[in-house]
Image 1 (cartoon, helix red, strand yellow):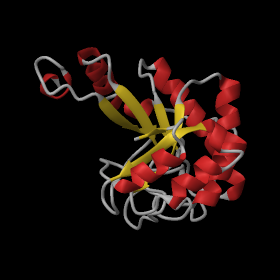
Image 2 (cartoon, rainbow, N blue to C red; image 1 turned 135 degrees about the vertical axis):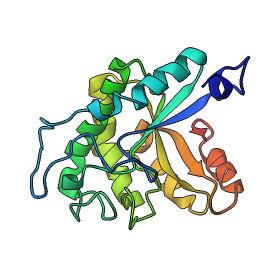
Image 3 (tube, rainbow, N blue to C red; image 1 turned 180 degrees about the vertical axis):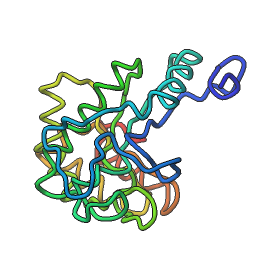
Image 4 (tube, helix red, strand yellow; image 1 turned 180 degrees about the horizontal axis):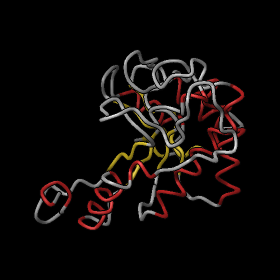
Length: 221
C-alpha cells in the first residue's frame, strides 16, 4: 500500500476507482441488494454494503490515509439482477421501470461510502455501457437511456440529497465520442453532468479533445 499510494515513499497513485458491487474480476458476483430469483425490493429494504466491510472499505481508508489527496470515482458494473431485463448479473440492461429505484440505489451507495470514510468525487452510472457482457457483471445502457436516467432520476435525486459528487457521462472507449456528446448536450441531463469518462481500449485519444472543445466548461477525464 505504501509503495502504491504514499507520494514520498511510493509512486503516489492519486486516482482510485471504487466499484459499486462486483466488477469483471470479482471473487464473487454481487450487488448491494441481491435477492432470490423472482423477488423485487423497490424500497431497497435489503440494501447493504456490508459485503465490502471486510476488505474493500478498509483498503480504501488505508489508501486515503497514505495519500489524502486521492480522487475517488465510484462506478457500478451492474445493477442488481432484479432491476434488469434478463434478471441476471451478466448481460441484459436496466428495466425502464427500474430507473427510479436504481437512482436511489446509487444514492444509497454514495451515502454509505461517505459514512465509511470514503468521499466520492465522481460517479459514472454504468461501466462500459456499450458492452453487453456474457460471462461477468455488466449491462447495456444506450445513450438515450443514460440521458433520461441522469436527467429525470439520478440528477434530481442527488440535488435533493445534497450530494456534491460529480456525475461523469459515458465511461467507455474513445471510439464513440457521440455518446458523451449526446449526454452533455441534453437539456435535462447536461446540467447534472460535470464531464465525461473514457477508456483507452479502442478508438483514438483525440476523441477527448472533440468533447473538450465542445464543452469547455466541463471536465473531461
